[in-house]
Image 1 (cartoon, rainbow, N blue to C red):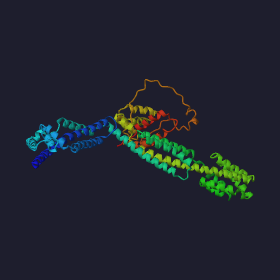
Image 2: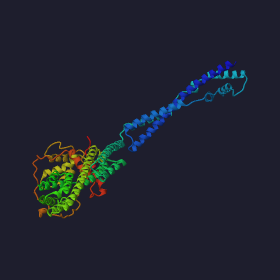
Image 3: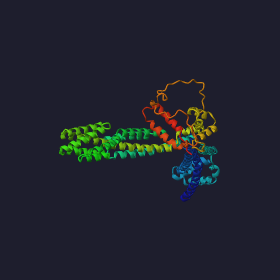
Length: 550
């Protein structure tokens, strides 16, 4: 009896396991689409954000959609498969799902001994439960279907994501520009770090000199690390640092002194002065300082005639160095005068003082050289940024249709130069800008001597013509009348129009000159005489002139 009861319950358990397997398949068909819906929903949010701000490119939106969909559907599958159901849960679900009136639950309780009943009743109940379970239509009671509404949402989400990944997005261009800026800025930060290391490891510089040189570089690096939004800001930052280093190099520059030392070296013909003259001839300030110190130590051992000769040479050299370095010249003059008066001790002190001055100038030259090298490195960095520059402002203006044909801008100039009959350049430009582009383009060709293809300037900005004839002019008086007083303006070459034969090479490809002009402009931005509020306009102006990438 007991064995029969156990066998019957084992068959009930097998049926429950079979139903539980179908229950998991049912859960898969429910939660996999729902997980996919969640993933696609997240991807749609990302795509929507990318349409209103620079967040993701179209390719990234498509990739994000695939990743989110995959993660969502895998999450739904794992949720359905990893959920565990105890035998009690399976029994309760079976009774509820198939309307078994708690037969399975009772059979389980009888088998577990929760309900005490005679063996006959227990066996009868288990047999009845098993018989009823075998008559259940599982496919009807547990259908394997997918929710149609959820499927519609999935298909709609996929269509929207596909459209977001295919249709052009203006924010993608902005994002790519920003990332390009970030990449360029990261490269320049690395270069600034290398430049800092070079200065810090320079054994010729003192701690104070290193600190002075590192200050503009550190500030530029910090500004770039804090984040810049455009290449123009990066260029301005590098230009400011470069300008400070150029100024520092200029302040410590000893080139003119070295030239004057070389000129003054010819005064030293005596045996005692020749080593000093040789060092001065080579423009070696460090060696000059050493020779001056040697003279300070040995001058008292010279004969009277040698002292007189050396004193005269020192005095003559001092007179030639007076304008370049009064301090060094004064020490040399004192030494020369003392030697001529027979005061070797005073001359030695003066020569030692001159040696200290020359040594300080040698250190100054090291600072100038290091500053110049650092400035040159920043120039290279700035040129790299300029060469890679796509120009956010330039791109935006081009998309808005604010760039005209290049020929229109050069047409007026060409016509003005071709007339050559007293017409000013301003008038020529006015005519060119007021004409249609094709006419202006012909004028531009004439300006280049009738040649064709005088340079690629297809993106030159052409402002609309504005008639100013209704406005009254303002009379102004120039500071100098060049015709009446040529000495105020230099030599006046001619007042007649220049004849153009048509063979002149006057047209230069736009790309060849733009980079140089842009570099000059960004360097000029760091000058003090430009109002701070105007620097942004200058940057925008030169950005608008930038040639478009082909």
